[in-house]
Length: 253
Length: 258
Image 1: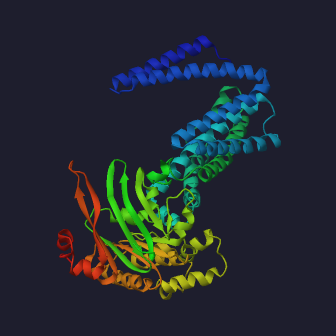
Image 2: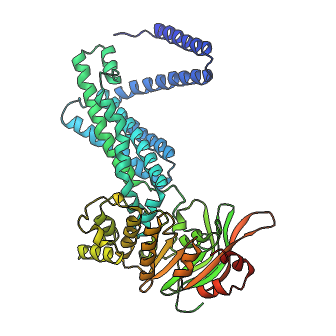
């Protein structure tokens, strides 16, 4: 399949104008935000496309690119969780180890060729999946502890450290964070055609090839997210920063 | 204060953010027996109780001034061992907070995290016996603790504390959410425990304080010139004196409701 920039531009403009018209007719707000989000997507994707095109010709830069991606993912997720620096390290490890394990298996089995063209987009998708789950698991973990504070106090009141007490809440929060991906995997092809599948078809691959790659992505995400959820809930503090420390003015002074 | 005091509080004020909860509390809590904290809602008695094993550390923006010594050592000292402090000072809350685990695992939780797994079955049994729950649950210790009645759960929580062989048990209105029969059982248990442990009991029930406590502290609400309220310690002494011959008019007025 060939894509012509001019025709793409015309299509994008037509789609945006129609979307704006629908929103205006329907009296919906946030039209400006929609325009801004479309503009941001345009700029970001053009930059990323140029960057990735450059990396494909300089494969040694791929590791650096992925490294930056992991750090940004951890930063984003930790901010969502409301964590401090120590929590950031936990989230970073959760995302890094989850994504690395999956990429390693896919590479060792030879399911995807060991080149930048295959591994870069695959790794990026795994990092994205790990980030989403780290955020979900981390937020849920802290919310659960907060909602069940008397139970948490019960553990702590028996001399459990905050982390030991938190472990009692980690399992449930991790499980809940995995539900969206499990549902997505269960309904693959029935409710929607997943992204990699659509992309491969548009790119000219056969449906069977597209299905194989999509399967690797979906099942890869299951592993990535299981690791990411488990590690996030075990490595971050169950309490928001500042809570659980000495409240004595004389000690703090 | 005397050397027999387990806790020595010196000019303790606790605030949550800008809100002062209790102000300038100084008192000693003696070894063994039951010390009751009574007073109207909002006088800070639960706050004061929870500060004794630093569970107030878990309240956002909490701040404490003054000192609380347990067994002669400042519990906020930089080298204070929080885990050990909380092992030595058990706590029972108003609402029974059984863990979502089996009865056995609830009682075994404390010993396990402190690495005391020798004779665990024996520890669990003995703790349940002392909490007066053994006969009701011995048939199926693997049953979920959350399926027990409120009164049974509260006794389970007591058994959980006892499994760690604590020196003090803090109780925050332990019978407030129970029916009269379950309350009476818990009261009997508290009276029984006081022969071996130091019990600090927060209660709204004045008759309960009069029945159980050896010493009673009455906290009242005071208002600042700008209208903000906080709790202060008005009177503290042997329960009989506080109820029969109160020194302060505010105490007399409050205990007259008993």
